[in-house]
Image (cartoon, rainbow, N blue to C red; front, side, top):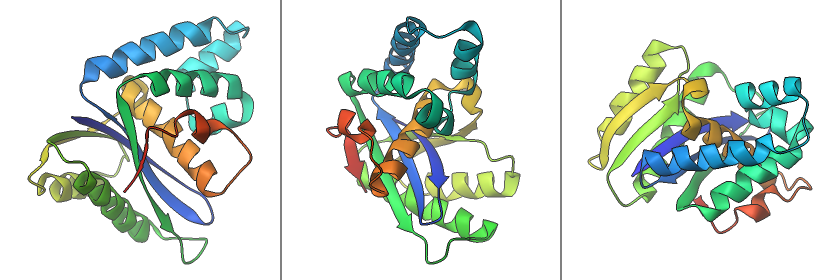
Length: 190
């Protein structure tokens, strides 16, 4: 199994969520299908470049909700799960060390909830000591085969995970949107 993982936060919650797939090819095919469907939307060239280059949750949530729905519809038809773990912050602000500890713990919770061998891809943080700590903690689990930091722009699964984090964050806050309803059968709280 492959787990693509990302994180998000707001004043109240810290969320780690991902896309769990049987293989990388399924993710790539879903990404191609999503891009083809989204490309048929009535967007100008500049908007298409922004959507397909950035592909960030915050951007799609606010300005391109139709594209976000297409992405979620595509994932809802595939053989995927969306494992996630949420931490309720005791205070609005967390220092970097706290965030790192919480991230690793939530990722451990997710990995432990998945019953088979895993390869984990996570979005680079640009902080080598933290990335090394993630790899060290995760690889210590028997079920984890490898842990690989990647650039999200080059990894469709991590781009999907970024957007799935946003869906979970919004649903935890009980915001008025139907994003979570599209993938409700895929959500797996850990």
